[in-house]
Length: 175
Image 1 (cartoon, rainbow, N blue to C red):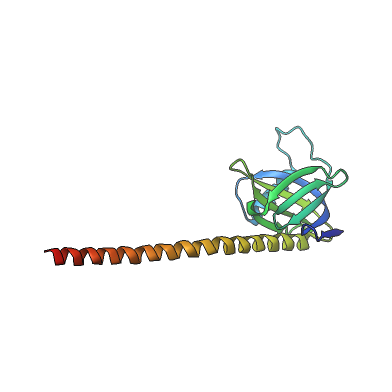
Image 2: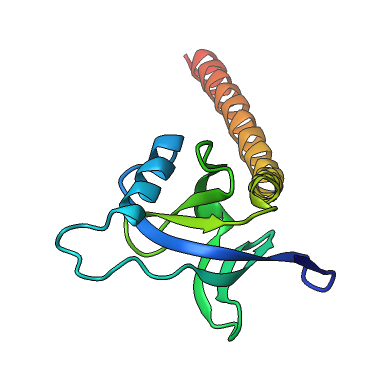
């Protein structure tokens, strides 16, 4: 079940949201596996039980990933694609996938976990493609600036050498 909107280039999938877990590292299958285990077995200090899996709408666009409650469309979380550092399907449970994103204000990472009967691999592929496209676009924009800066540095070195050579000629002719 997916919808594609041409107006804002985003795609929406209805999936079950398993939860969000704070993680120590920013990438790797081990991070996803640890996150899913922590959802299955909550801390002893945590008196809250694992919540029922909520159906959410997962909106993917070139700018980011938005997680909305399916019925009310209330925004639960939003993650800019630039903050996403890892995304994969959990091999032991192929219906479960997740991604790791850096918190925008704090120096911490969260793992967002979902379940989809049909679209897990497709969603991971789309998130990866969107991430790569965004990085490519940033590098083209930034890359152009980098080339300009590099050209200016080179020009500066050439002028400094020329200046030094002219100083030597001037001092030689003045002696």
